[in-house]
Image 1: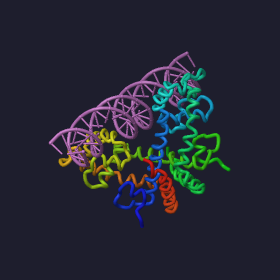
Image 2: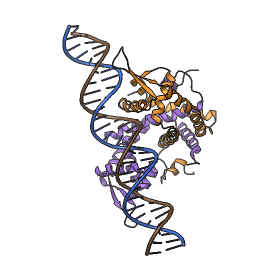
Image 3: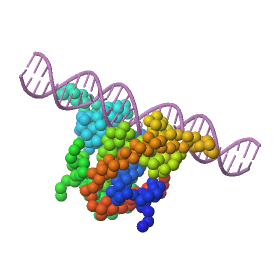
Image 4: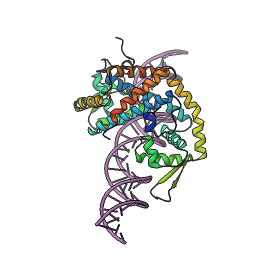
Length: 159
Length: 159
DNA sequence: TGTAATTACTTTACATATCAACTATCGTCA
DNA sequence: TGACGATAGTTGATATGTAAAGTAATTACA
């Protein structure tokens, strides 16, 4: 049997211990490389992937969101949000306003400048996605999603 | 049609634009969550994921490797290696030695302490892998790997 | 042979991620 | 009402990742 592509890429001498391990490494490696690609695109617009993610979430919501809510949707730990929002605010892409009802809460909103920027990225990002996965058939894409969603069911319980 | 699991997780109001985009997000999200899991395990041994990765690569090689070679196998940018190796050296898990033939090269080797630590992680890591993906059949795992490897073929050219 | 290009690595600067600990605010309930 | 616990966010410390620039050593070649 020919050496697998991943095995070759990582210069491993011995076959993987199991299809299980190989699948795991394939997931991590594919995600890493795709993230790098997207990161390069964002950098052309002076954004980091996380920063873009915040903007996209806010646009999707269409209205201000509390910090914690954004952090939850990003799967990001809370402390990191502060600095991230600081920078976005300094770039005038988002604005922060403390809630008057509950003064613990800070609402974050997209500025017109931020909205424009995230809209500007739609087309190039769609083109990148197409480039990255466009060579898979619709059936393959659906099967890939199904398998990955099934994979994640192992995380449902315990934390 | 029922809302997809990912769509629900991200609290998206509208269906994904395309199976393509959904697959992409599934890849990124699955990898992110699995990485978090592994990261937690490593932390129990006072290691970060990158640090473990260095140790594993060195053990796999069985002999000292230059910094650049390690960085390549990790897909990591070179500057980050310096600090990473600094910390591993301070923990006495690796040792550095400048090559006498080519004095630009620094060879990195696993110390006995480092080797012991990485061996110690084999069993818990295999158990984690089993927990994360053990509920997929062998056929599914192979299909998942096949699809991900096919996905990555789009990266073959241009950088 | 001596100069220019390359290579291996380091340094610096900055963005991000984690954890632990802290502040301010809110709710609840005795 | 007043103290306790929960919640929202911030701060600080450490590790990682990226880019850009710098240093030292080697190679290529005129």
